Image (cartoon, rainbow, N blue to C red; front, side, top):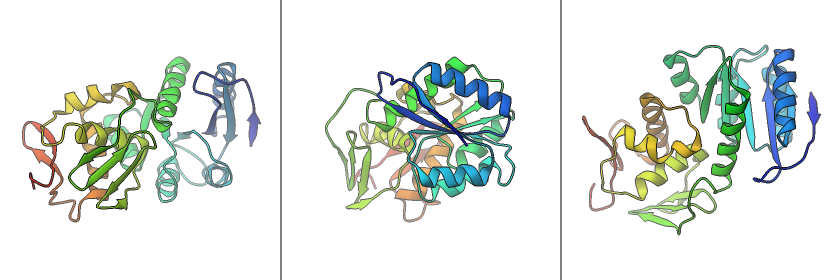
Length: 242
């Protein structure tokens, strides 16, 4: 593994774990990010990436899909069992089905190769702002029925039970909770969270809604809280709406 430090950015020190087996791409990506104040550690295999992620706390994980040992999907799924670190998946496979599969595995964002280094940097910084509670204007805790969200700590509880949300899931649920009882279309939800630099395509919302339902619904196949309004969008119900 390679680790290099550099100066800090406006967001403070940002530490990134890049899991990439292409040595040339890893070197070029690391150099660019380091020139812009990012601390980069490189792991070259899936198992090495998992070991490094367990050993140290990172702000963002950049995860290649095609990795020796264990592929990016496997690594992402395992990480999600123990960590909510923002994950940006990097892969040459840019079809929508692959992007959806990456999101379903637990990734927060997806960038197809060849990617712009500038865009990658912007997405890293956006993930960090969101994870550190600076993705938008600060606000007081939000209450929607038995659901409570604290934007300052990015923590959420349902009936007093802590919800293991990723930062993107929290941001999407926050947008719904702030407008509880109101139907929001996919386009409106994408617009509300666009400052987080998630790649804009309709099915990304569906995937994240599916993942949130796994965490807040007693029966995700028959949701009582996060409802689908056919042909219109999604609605977060309060106690009066269920």
